[in-house]
Structures are given as structure tokens and as C-alpha cells.
Amino acid sequence: MKTSLHTALCRILKPLVRILHRKGVSVGELSQVAKQIYVEVSEEVLEAAGERATTSRIAIATGLTRKDVAQLRLSKTEEYTPTGRYNRSVRVLGGWMHDREFLDADGQPARLPLRGEQGSFEQLVNRYSGDMPYRAMLHEMERVDAVLHNEDGTVQLLTAAYIPHENEAEKLAILGTDVSLLISTIDHNLSAPRPELRFQRKVSYDNLPLEVLPEFKSMVNKDGLDLLIKFNEWLSQRDRDSNTAIDGSGRMRAGVGIYYFEEPVPAVLNNPNTEELPDEA
Image 1 (spheres, rainbow, N blue to C red):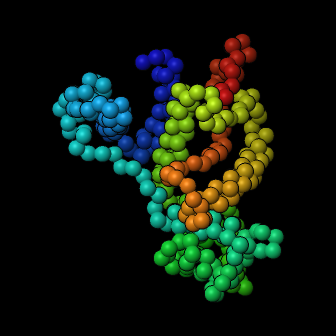
Image 2 (cartoon, rainbow, N blue to C red):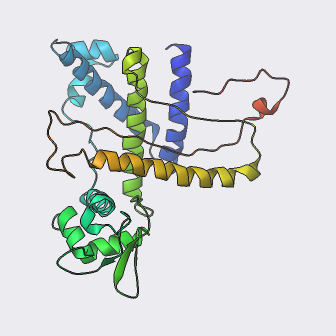
């Protein structure tokens, strides 16, 4: 394996293995999953090239035995599909922020009466969450601090994002989807011509005092959310689920992810006599 790719792989795996170790996932289990993915990817690549994806060809490409490949081809890895609760909550939030019936005079999400034939939380849920009862949606959104049920009976939106604070399964599912999308973007950029490159940037400094981090984190939370709300509004107006009048071909997923990070700098980088390493773009 090339040194640069080996280094990148180690950096990807280290935080992932921390999670696996904490959850009691053994090396053997990780190895089995890796073998499964190798077989599936090899099969996809061969078929995309118009070639026969035989067990022998896959064995040669992956370095696995024909017996292992044959067994692995009998099963497939599970693709994550967001739960109905997650999807419905996101759709309700989107409708609340963009559907004129649920906006105030300033175009902001209005305080909604709990029930009513028009402009109520009940109608919002009925329109955007399918068959989920409005009270069940209210309890779910209260649980994640997305809404406030006021004493006067109105329901107030507190956040523009649905974040599953306590649902570990949803959090781990986000790990699978978000990291996968980032790696897919990097994979695309490794081989795509310049005009087709996808946006992928970060800003990072490595000699910051601890005391400045709370202010920076607060700035990222506010400005990052404002930017995502702007993108969300644009996308929702063009998504067929939110706007049935939208025409066009195909069915594509597109979006933008923003994340905050912080970590201590290794001791070797604190030594002024060592060569300074460049920040990664």
C-alpha cells in the first residue's frame, strides 16, 4: 500500500476504532465487514465495466479465497435507511420554516395553536408527517428540545434542526451516512477534472489557547446553522417531496455538511525546533 494512502487509512480508522472498541466490536467482526465490503465493491466495479463478476474474478481482485468470496456473496451489507420518526420530524421542521400557512407576517416560523383546521400544529403534522399523530410528534419534538408547548396552548419552534440527542441508534446512523458522504466527495475529487470538483474545504489553526475555543464554537454554532438554514430553504423549494410542482429528470441527493472539531496538538508539534507541518485544506 502506498505510504500516503496507508497514512490516510490510519487516520480514518483510528477514531472509528475508538468507537468500535467502546462498543465491544472485535477485530474479527471488523475484518468480516471489511471482507464483505471488498467483495461487494469488486462486484460493482466489474459490472460497471461490463465484465462478468464471477467468484474467481472477485477472488483475484480482493485477495480472498474463492470459498470466502462465494460465502460472502450470499449476504449483503445493510444499507441504513433513516427511521420514519427521523424523516417525519425533518419534514415537519422544513414545512414549518417554508410553508406560508405556518409562517408569521415576517416570514418566520409562527407560534401555532395546537389544534385547528388551518395554520395549526395539528395541520402541520398531518401535512408533512403522513399518518403520525400530532401529539406523538409534539412529544418527540419536545424530547429533542425542538419545540416549546407554551402555557397559552401554542407551539413554538426553538431550533431549525432535528438532533436525536438521546437516540444512540440514530446517532450511529448519522456516523454511517455523514462520514460515507464525505469520503465519497473526496473519492470523487481524487479523479474528477477541475470543472467537476465538489466543494470540500476546512479552516484549521494548531496553536490556539483553550480560552478562545468557547467563543469560536459559539460562532460556528450560530453562523454554521444560519448557512445551513439558507441552503435548506433553497433545496426545499426544489425537492419534489416539498414542492410537487417541481419537474425534471432523475432522482438525486445533494447537500452540504458542516462540523466543528477540536483536539490537542501532539507534543511533537509543540516543539519549536521541529519542522512545522502545513495545515490541510
